[in-house]
Every structure is written in C-alpha cells, then in structure tokens.
Length: 148
Image (cartoon, rainbow, N blue to C red; front, side, top):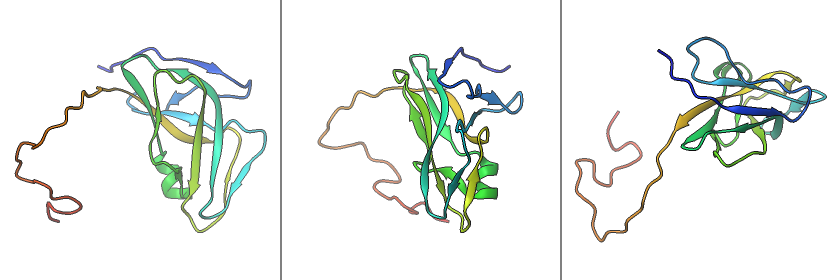
C-alpha cells in the first residue's frame, strides 16, 4: 500500500510541468526546468533554475528537493545546497540551484528533469538546555569515530 497526501500546486508559467513520479513506487516526483532557452553551466558554476511552479505543502510536512541520481552521475549536476527544504508556509516558486561538479560544460534544456521532490512528515523539537547530557557508548566521538 502506498501512502498518499494531497499537495496543491500552481503553474506560474504556461510552460511549467506538473511534478511527476517516474514509477508507481518512486519516492520523489521529478521537477522540470522552466526556462525559455537552454542554460549552460561551466565546471564549478552554480545557476538557479526555475521550475515555474509553486506548491502548497500540507502542515506537518516538508518538501525536500534532492538530486536526480542520473543527472548527478551522468552529467555532474546536483543541487548546490545538497538538499533543499520547502516549508509548508512557503508559496513562492520552487527554484533549484544546480551546481556543475563535472569537468565539462553542461547544458540544461527547457523541460529537463532537474531534481526530485520528496514530501515527508516532520517533528519540531522543544529544546531544553541542561548542564549535563546522558552518557552514551559513542560519547563525543564523531567524523569516523565508529570505525571503517
């Protein structure tokens, strides 16, 4: 059984594409470039690519914008911030800051799939300052402290 929630979206441009899932069991819905012309990214460059859509994420959920694995591995393009966060109260256009990690210029064409949107529930925390925290086996060990 697949869990599903309703997410309203608005096309901000007639050329915009509706987010679409590639398969019945895809976790992420593809987001598409909504540009008039192709965009070229030279190695090491970051450009903001519009999607031409805004979404209405339900309260208690967040939209996470991830790289598309094929675009990242075949062309070296991935979101510059690694994971974008779309809060439920944001109603502006989804923009994807793509970074070219490759050693070659890469073209983004109008209508190209540029990222994927995953909708997930989240919790907010109540932070409480303490003088001491409970002990754990790991303790303060970080960055490779658990071995190979």
